[in-house]
Image (cartoon, rainbow, N blue to C red; front, side, top):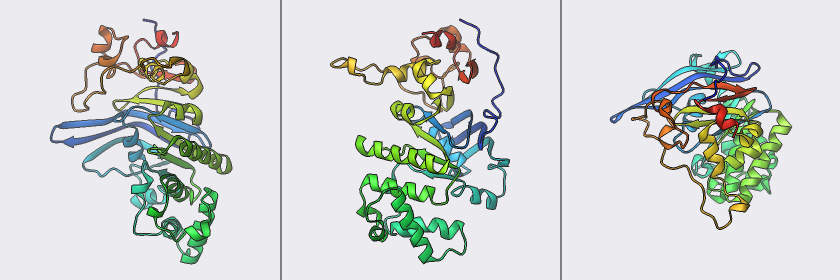
Length: 340
């Protein structure tokens, strides 16, 4: 085993971040025990950059952003740590302050636009509501006008006519565009996109991601992209954070992580991506399943599925440590993985 650099303080992780999350922990009390959905996650995002959060279902990605957006009821959720927008701690600031920031300065696109939109209200009314709530004094006429402008901006044809349509009159891809229009209505500093291309075919998926990139270029907003699709992360993020069982396994510049993983879990994710040269061959998979969060394994959470595991992996949980400039990994053998 090669010695790693000393463990480093993860708070704050990015000096000039507009959003900083430090040592975030989210747990839920259940009849089956305590579910520790997020365990010590720290992240930061700068103005204009795209941060990808990658991992299998149940890794803690959506719960982390749910805590950031204040979407988790407490109880049952117990939230610890710090979430700062600028110098405002969103976990401890007055509700009036956090309501002003969430939805206005930090906005979100949800996984399933078809179910996220209210079927009994026109899309124009739902987009315009952003202005009526966050910009007091906006008339219904002005809100409708702004809704049309936003629908044009996200490339919905005949926006002036379709602003009075209901969500069920739009396709899945167009519904997702409506959600994006709502999310960018107030020109937020940060847009969180939680699995924004779920249930969309690959052509529409590419259109949605091009739209998000276009909006980033136009407005300078930061993007937090949450997905289990490593291809989406590779093509649409500047930095990536890989999560597993509520923990950060690896983080760093996307191009560097994709080219040379520093954690066996990331390595396994990369190897499971289908490639042209693998035609007619069996797909490579990571054996086993993620752990049950009420019965976490000892040591490294990934060790039951890891082909590189050694006795130390079973006994000692590895700390997230720096392995190269801008690269962190929570693996006892990170340097060996990095060196291939």
